[in-house]
Length: 293
Image (cartoon, rainbow, N blue to C red; front, side, top):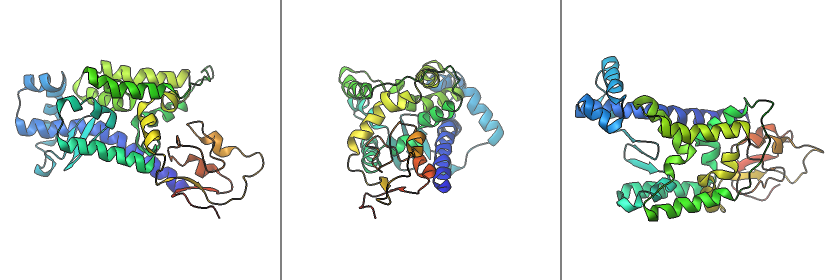
């Protein structure tokens, strides 16, 4: 199952690279076509925007015409050509502004993908999840081994759904969206809020509870879990044969603290495939539920 692990890491790297490069690509194309003054750029995008655009234009010249408008947006929503995608939780905070129908459809598309594939976003694409797993390899010996209960994420999901009714939103503080904001701020300046939204959860994962944010605090994980009860792709057992005696390799490899030994880790499974690669009996796979042979 090395191919599965390589594919997952490739997707994770691509997502991080896209989030990092997309703001610069957008500003390169926008700054080159609108010809805004440095003061206007800084007012719209941040204190480093003019220097960023100027440096890109001086180094790369004007962008190809086909690239203009190809990637537009930020960490909450992104347009790739004709396709508009927005995080469903962030969309709740935009509904009071009557967003374009294309954006609403993009949010529904993301929600449909959650329903079909469960928490696969967490296992394969979440930028915060990727960083959390990277930092877990550096946990010091004195780090605590605490655990959080799973209910806080549902309270945060309820807050995300209800606060827009009062004209507020918690989208800016969601760590997986904060990573995109942090990258954007690195290009254009003003990293304070984005850094708080990302670094405090990462430090808590590093020192207090390993992957606690993804396991117990993330409202997006809660939403994905709720809509994915009948998802199409999930972890499935290949055979009815029992596991090897005293083998807990798959459970020990699960970063969300699940037990995949029976092929039924529960709705929190994010299809990351780590358990598949460590199973000495090759009993597990990702696919559609079916009767084990």
